[in-house]
Amino acid sequence: MTPYHLFQGYGIELEYMIVHKDSLNVMSIADELLKHELGIIGSDFENGVITWSNELVMHVIEIKTTKPESDLEQVEKEFAKNISRINTVLAKWNAMLLPSAAHPLMNPFADTRLWPHDNNEVYSLYDKIFNSKGHGWSNLQSTHLNLPFHGDEEFAKLHAAIRLILPLLPALCASSPILDGKVSGMLDTRLRYYKTNQARIPVITGKIIPEEVYTHSEYKEIIYTPIVEAIEVHDSENILDPIWVNSRGAIARFDRGSIEIRVMDIQECAAADVAIVNTVIETLKLLTNEVFTSLNAQKKLSTEMLATLFDQSAVTGLATPVDDKDFLKAFYLSSSATIKEIWQHILKHIPAENYTESTRSLILIILEQGCLSERIVKSLRQDHSEKNILSIYQKLSICLAENKLFIP
Image 1 (cartoon, rainbow, N blue to C red):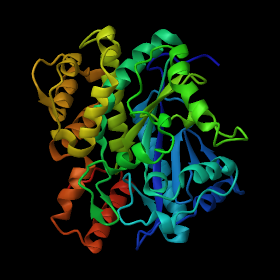
Image 2: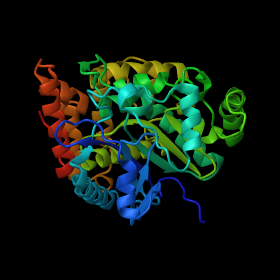
Image 3: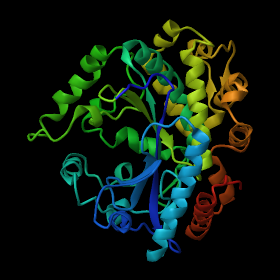
Image 4: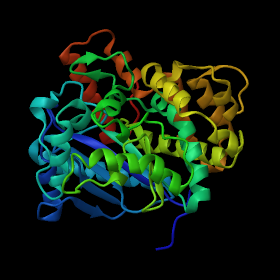
């Protein structure tokens, strides 16, 4: 297969909860949904441009591009069509898809059923090591973006740029402000659990921001080898592969020539997810083309500093102040700024031909109205009752079905 080079195609994955239409209780029927299309219980249903797949738990379904795609407008349309088709099938069980990165009322210890079919030996081992029934395993839905590279030179450019953009993403993408019926105080509560759900083996996640490594051999030595050594005591049958056990916020897949960004919360509709993905891609193009600063300067940014900013971004979002001079210089900024101001600065540099007016308008609305978490909290209007929370998340399900932004 001819390899993909930088920005020649993208793999996008969206995860959604399956819930009861009225109560919003999670429904563990992902296998029945896939069986409806396949005729038998299976893991993947390929529906042209989009493939449906199972996940760790039975109440989550993933839809993803079947192969790398470059036409993001078409990808958005295909995602919307497949969401509509899935909802039509789910209506048979009085069920539907629910967006956002975390169910606001789910009790994961009571409501979780792990996928019991093919490949479940991996899921069973994870459950044995980490207990897969907490929020960090069964109640966190995300958007994954896979970006291609070929060879160490392209990997270095892409990895350096991705490390730099990761701290800005929670502010733009957070959609998990409520867990266990309570506003958590974090805009991106999912990331709290993402960081800690594998704390028993800390080398798996590191500091979420990947280490300063820019070749395949460095990555193997600094990231993969410690993971291998740490998991072998728990995995006598060699079931786990360090390539996909690695749970940093962006993981390198040298086996398929891509880096996968994993820190973005799922949004309320495909249009919002694809607009954010488009913005991430265009920002990475600016960075890899050294529009703001050199590759060498990007490489030198410390993991510790980026991780600290990332943690702050998950709590205070777009209002997060940025004072680190080296980080600001990386975007050609000379004075302190909020993350919102950094995104506004980036948008001014994205060429119009790479960014439709509808995408730009949607991102500008997010920057002005707030990320989805901020809009959810605003819409509560201080009423944190279960009834009010359910009402708001019912509205989110309508946004998903109609492919429109949630505005309080």
